[in-house]
Image (cartoon, rainbow, N blue to C red; front, side, top):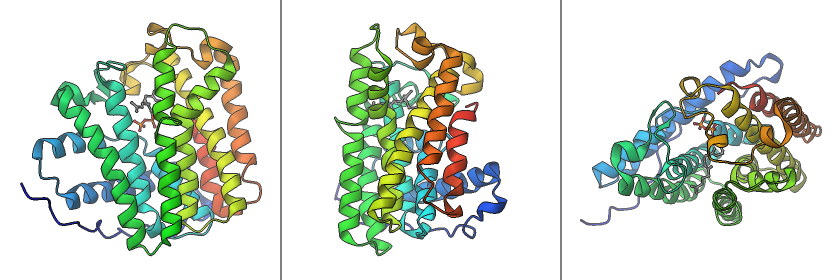
Length: 319
Ligand code: GRG
């Protein structure tokens, strides 16, 4: 088998006009943005023309299985909040979803959380076997970085901004971010954690990718240092708010509704916000964090309204 020549990412499918904050309906916005991301994701998979059909199929199976597409939507919204062009960031947004999907595939493996159901369908290893599922995750993670470099270069983003964005994202995914958080999570199963230990764990496991989504989206859209600092604060508060809500949904929702196994945190002896704070206090904490995220945006104009609404969505969602 010969290595294929390097291929450019697909052309960008043009979104509707920029969002007008005064008439924003969050449901319509989420649907529009998720549709844009999904069309581009599918085109990226096709353009990559992976030479191994079974691996390509396994990657597509999990990537195109739905999901809220929240991380890419945040990257697009952050780019728009600083007046950037969607074209500069769409590849980055899709790469975030590829990385998120890799983390879900690996998290579901028998050696990790050992889950059978994800996004309403059998988990990747249940369909393709553990070896191909592991490789599908590896493929998504690695291809994501190639996609960022190629698509941002194609959109004319300055090389220095691309390098900074890739470095920040790699750190968010690696041993001091998502992978490190997952390691702490597995190593502390069955132990009591304090609220601050739990927040550190989730800041790494969940929050780091949210921060990279908003900061990367904004940087590629031309944000300045003060805007990036504010968006970093927004992303870390939002990431935690999202995770507190995820813990609550695990307790109060059914497996059918979530499309993934519910009640599993307690079964596995995991420390969660409801187990440490109780359900009502955890709800309050989620609202407090969402408010903190919105407050980080005070210096932004109405172009940041989607980000403001997404902070509310993170804590009011039922999925
Ligand atoms: C295996 C490297 C590695 C990391 C795993 C992110 C993660 C670490 C595991 C996924 C499981 C989990 C409960 C993570 C917390 C973050 C979270 C709530 C993920 C689910 O994200 P959603 O709700 O999922 O955005 P959809 O399906 O909507 O995309």
